[in-house]
Image 1 (cartoon, rainbow, N blue to C red):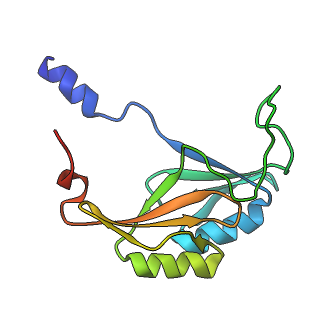
Image 2 (image 1 turned 90 degrees about the vertical axis):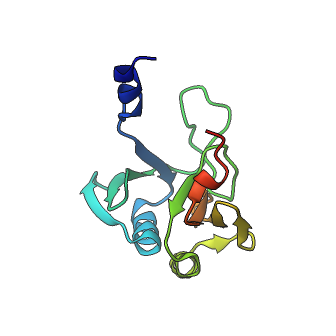
Amino acid sequence: MPNSQIADARRPMVEILINIDVENAHAAERFYCAAFELKPGRRFGDVGVELIGGTSKIYLLAKDTGTPGYAGAKATRSYQRHWTPVHLDFIVTDLEQAIARSIAAGATAEQPIRDNPWGRIAVMADPFGHGYCLIQFSDAGYDAIASE
């Protein structure tokens, strides 16, 4: 691959926005701001709020329980604890402090802290059924396990 293509491959191609469906955007705003020290940006009436202060903007979108995620969907939204193959990882410098802040805001710790060659991880759930992880990297981070 020519050097110019390698340089282009390292440049971000897209901006990532994170959208999280919640039953109540105001309650979700309180949780995410308290747990992750984010701040509200733009508001979209009662249907959503933009959170800033992280590396990507997070949009909390109020969606009623029982509504379909898209036209024709058989499954409907549920805010009981659920699993999805896509989740958020929040990188923190003090894992215990981040866990305490999350729990104080309304989260649940789902497993004991796990140690890995790349760092430590806590598996959590927000009050809206979404799982997330808190990660405190070791000095090597993912380089400790990277094959290239």
